[in-house]
Structure formats: C-alpha cells, structure tokens
Length: 270
Ligand SMILES: [Zn+2]
Image 1 (cartoon, protein in one colour):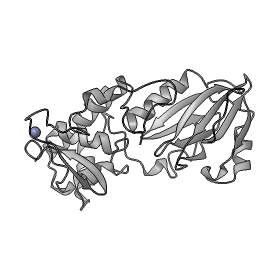
Image 2 (cartoon, protein in one colour):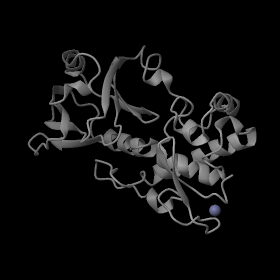
Image 3 (spheres, helix red, strand yellow):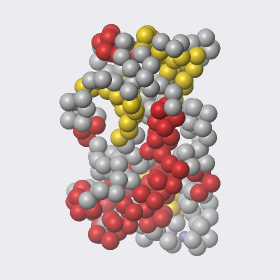
C-alpha cells in the first residue's frame, strides 16, 4: 500500500503534467469508486482545470477553482498520464481527458481506491480529511497532543501509529522503520509511551519519511509508482522485510501485530 512518501512522489510527478488543462470528458467503467452521484462528479469537473495538487496523509487533493477531488489509492491505485490513443487496459477505471488530448488514467486492479469531491469550505471540516491527524513528518506536531492521543489507546504502539487519526501517512512499512529507529518495541502498549519516547517517535518519523521522499518511496511487493518513477528507499530499510538487525546482528522477529506482518528486533527494541 502506498504510504506518505509514495503518495508524495505521485503528487510531485503529477504536478509536472496535469495542471492548467481544461477537463473535457470523464469516463469510468466502475463509477462506484466515486462517493456520491457520478453524473454530479462529472458535471463538477468538466470545463474546469486542475490548478494545484496537495496531499494530506495518504490522500491526494486535486484542487480546482472551488472544488477538490480527493483520491485515496488504497492498496494498488495508480495514476498514468497518457495520450488518448494509447491502449487502455481493463484495470483503468477512470479516465479524465484534457483538451490537449492527454488523459489522467486511474488504474486499480483491486478496486479499493476511492474518490470524492469536496468544496473548499468542506475540505477539512468533513470526512475523510477532518478525521486525519497531522502528517507524521510535520515538525509542528505538538508532542503533548500526540502523547495525549496515545494515552487513550489500549492497543499496541504499532497499531496506534497505523491509526491515521493520531498521526497520518504511516503504513505498515514505515511504522516498522520508525519503531526500529526509535528502539521501541511494536508490542508496547501505546499508553505506556513516555514523553521522551514520544519525542523520539516523532523525530524518527520525520527523519525516515523525509529521506524516503528524497528517494521517491519504497518499491516493495506490489507498489511501484505509476509515472515511470521507481522508489529506492528499500535500500535503506532497517528491519522491514529484513532478517538481521542492523544494530546488533540478532535475527529480526517477524509476527502479526493487529493483523499486520511486523518486523522488529527483540534485543534493540524495548
Ligand atoms: Zn537489534
């Protein structure tokens, strides 16, 4: 699943192609991926231009004049920017055509991705974005606010960091990495994390996510960026998918925590 660095990479790639071209046609063979009425969706977009692309957590926000198209790629969503005469495969579920005869194509083999339109007024005051915590690499996060949220959780720190309402943008890979760099066990109860550990988690998250963005994300299993970009952060992973701890050379433990396969060192991470 694309996490913050991968979605940010997609955003930066799309910024180079889709801006300031009038949308002339929208087609979909799976309109159910759009929340709300599909004809309304089309009518709100056709005739307008994408003037910017933002991101919050793992959500892309295509900004038009007074409307925003929010897209979550979920497991396998990918965007392509192609000329209209290029072949369309059966997993392309949305085609947004511009007046320059190029198309923004959304592919999703598993159909888990979702799109929804929001006005500027409703963008951050209604779900899904109203429920999101600050980006995990946002240096303005208040550590006291963060620890207050952790105190209310009865599950593990691994599960708490996957919860996008606490901080957003981290998924399974980067939570493993953040906890390894912080030397904190993913099995710890979230409400046992103290102030110093909370500061460490936030600084580790910023360090890892910022570096992963520079390397255009992690290319692992099914994730590849759609736009000809191959992430290289897998070269820097500490524990996720690894067998030997980079700090102490002990074998890495691999187990399910909250249903997610987790990698950690039982010696270094306490
Ligand atoms: Zn170790």
